[in-house]
Length: 249
Image (cartoon, rainbow, N blue to C red; front, side, top):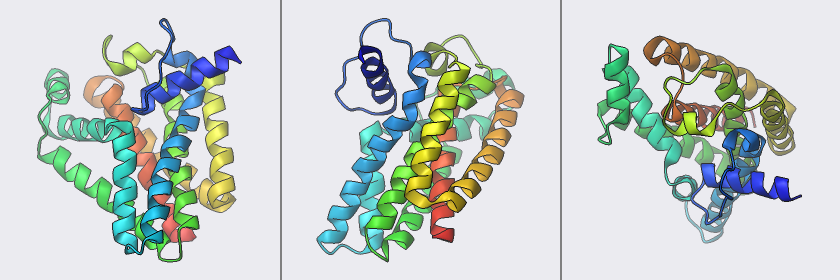
């Protein structure tokens, strides 16, 4: 139980800004199976805000906006930052060195701004569409989206080599096959319970195709993946699950 507790704390510390203390020497690679559970926590936070917003009479779009903002706040915009840096680097850089330099730059560029606008609009729009019929369905979709998006990360981290020897991804390490499989299994179970088998299957296929494309771009541009690329992968998964839920449910 102590090991499980430590793993859960590591997953929450990596994915959120919740006040958890992780023992020294804990490796995220060993706790990667908990990323899906950490995603469920983030989804619950956003879902709770969505329910409160609708309960006090806010329009679906406003309630959905607050819910997405709450998830960004809970994670410290970690994944949004990765999406912006990745699109800036991949869009603006030509050689590997220039791409990595752009990605490390704390300033945001045009590609990053556009990517964030599109990401927020797609997620808010999908949630608002689901929220038109009440709070239950969008809350479940939000939990499924955050669980599934983070549940795919350990497999992506294992399949795609690290682009360089330092940074967030390098410090996290390479998850074991068992840990990656555990994360996927947890994400799949949660998604099926929340949004059904059909929506889960379609989402999984779309995410697999999108992350395969992102992996190919990462290998071509910088020789692999970084923490920023992982952030872009999470945002991609989150968007696809919400859009699929909005289209099918």
